[in-house]
Length: 180
Length: 374
Image (cartoon, rainbow over all chains, first blue to last red; front, side):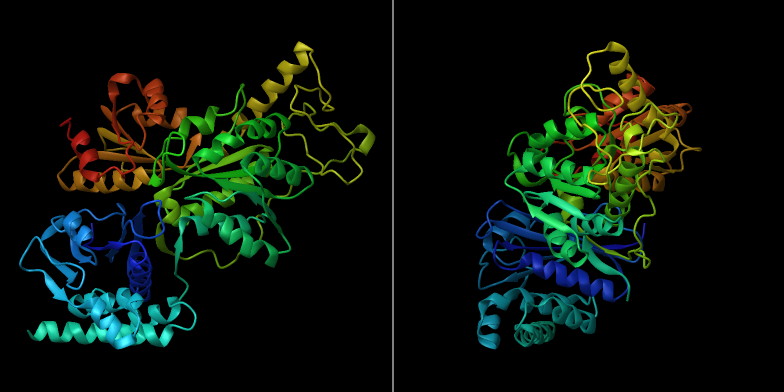
């Protein structure tokens, strides 16, 4: 089996975790990778637990769900409590420290994702795209150009520029985090 | 770039369009709604008809009416809606109406868990409507297969004049994968059989050697009767035993004659194997992963993925099972298709791996069964 990278994006319904997962998967396709994206959510449209999972590989992907996440993004405390321990040893945990105060490991990368969204774009709703910028900036699981193309293709009408700004803010934050 | 990110539900709808489907009637339900959404968008572009009906009973009725009118018709639903459709699916079986019903399975019974996957409708797809009747049931395990098997479903329904059921599940339906759809999206090259006889000689249920009498659309001057009652060759109700028996024999025979066409499956590494994993749908993904893990540990494991669940591929299982010591059947139910595998291969050989709590079976669980750890 070829190497597979397992990514889980976890948060609350309405935060755009599933759309972020779709954008990331779209970027992986643009990079010429194999990809499977799945999601899990409750019957409610907003407020319940929501997560997207993305598997990226060079070869065929059989089991389509995350087994042990290589990369975990938590955008809510509930998500972090639930999935924080379900990671591969040495995996990367990224939390929005505006939403998450307790992490199961001290190695968690803390980024003020919601705050960045509010400050850079004026809209907290772009936090999911800021998060993608942070995640890809830190890991390089997809190329920046493919991710930008995917955001351009998938952003709701009239929000393209705002989302590209959000993405740039995320990459910038990743740069700063790596320098720390 | 030709590869696009697409959901299984979308691929099902695109497969329908590629197969020339020009009529969809349905009622939205998680996790099948996306099929209706895409059809609502795509059908008007193709001069097709999309109708959102008041419920699933009416949806199935509309599909039958459209098909008798000459349309290539389908509907899509999930468990609760599939239950409502059963009466009219029986009508379609009795009147031999070509149509396609996609059931994107979710966890039941009843309303269950609408956003969770399951494979609990395998037996319902076979026997959900009352009385003896043949049916064809296809089950995709990827986004691409959702496209391909939908095309096949229309092909089989038209060619053998029968309802065909597609069993997806919440994961396959909502999952996104990169797929490259056939560039040549020509209409399915299967036309409904025509008749050479004039209207006054036409018998819509004639006992022909092919066992598939042509169905001439209403409105073309061929006047005939359709009913859910047992009927004679002209379609009129009958209580004559020889006519009832002839109908039953013919509809079973037409599917039996078509087995080599209808039974779709993929096998991998069976010849050298002592253990065989038989799987379908989403569980086939877990199973294939587990088979790779087991082979990496030096186990000789064969893999058989069933794309056609009904008619059940008895001979395929029988032949595959001959030299096999143990057969593992993972399913997201408490053992439905395993009943058939056990019937053919014997209970002693079969190990079931089941999960019916809305979570996909993990490869580890199947690996344990392969290694005899359970």
